[in-house]
Image (cartoon, rainbow, N blue to C red; front, side, top):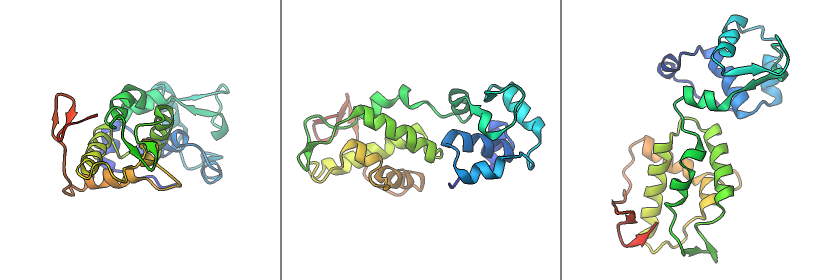
Length: 198
């Protein structure tokens, strides 16, 4: 599990490195490695954990228990702290970027909204550096580029997020973050430049 830490962001979150790591481990799902690392909390001041309890970011299923297995994270409050909008608040807008009636490989590219939501939630948990705006812009650019070729070989919406451990969305997000020049669509009255309704 790789977690990127930017100290300037930690300051804006009001978190220490230890607090951020613990919250991120709980948010992204504990594995055996993280359980072993945190099983005694020997490297973390318990006072820092109490602060997370007070801020309603963490809770324990057992009173006054600091066991890693008893800790739970309040995802809504943690996302607010990180200034990340929950997927449920913008999923429909993202899904509606995909063109209606377009097939690729015999399947409609705009398909399986529930599967897309599930994959987006997982994607953001694994890639918290990509904000909603970055994801939206990355998707718009990808679809605009594909529209220039009549949507030939366009990925299906859920596969664009992730398929077999590979994420095209992550690559497109990196291009946005690194200011790599790619065509950006001109949206006019809800239509993609070129006449295809999204």
